[in-house]
Length: 326
Image 1 (cartoon, rainbow, N blue to C red):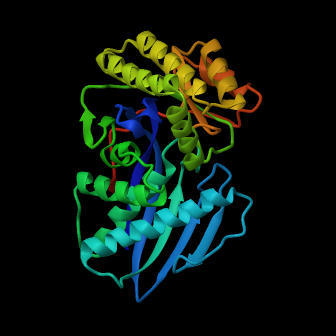
Image 2: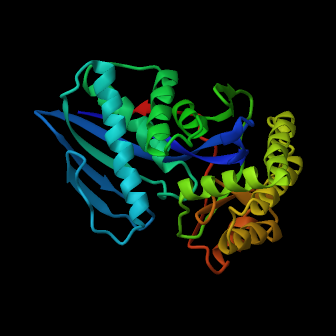
């Protein structure tokens, strides 16, 4: 029996634009998914717990289960798909196509909230399952195989950003297939606000794609997000939170223009800014979920806790560790 964990992430800059080859900078945070893999005689038994802040449990066998839960069905279906595909990757690596597994998933990361829950689960699952079969992969190899999982489950609309960040830890830069860790970033005072909801990543990505195809200025907006990333790279590691914050604010405005924000996300962004944050933006696909703010004080955290529609607010420091065996 092997247990592995991997961190969630926030996007400092670049979500949505990264799908079109623009650069992005996601950062691992100290919220983790833990996956335990135990080899069994045959089949697949999966127990999933705590994938939302309230938590729920799923058990199914051989990928055929249909949980009856008060959770968006598309999120649950995708979650089952991520685990099935991760196990398939482990079987392929070990050349054990018929290997049976019992998988237990526990996570501190809200499901579908823009904090990289699926990527963290996939990365940890591949690491735990391959180790259980006697194979040890490098973080880079795990990142590549985890990307294949997300690409399959998300119908070819995934980028390497989430899975690479979760596997490597720290702050990373992703531009197409060019992925690297950014050294010397230091601490980043993240404050996260969560509205209790979740966006449908596939639907939101498809919506941006349609806008981009229909309007030239929407394509220009996507390109402008890439420009923000390139500007932000020059500021990372300088502790100039004011400059970083301004770029976060620009990035949120462009994402809102692309239609991926929401009333609750905008309310939390403005509350964090008015509470003293250097900057704030949505993180992830949008439509609901989380915002990230930069604030060394308690001002943004306090403001978010009193913001209607914000169900939780918490600090989440940069996590320099990627996937690891527990």
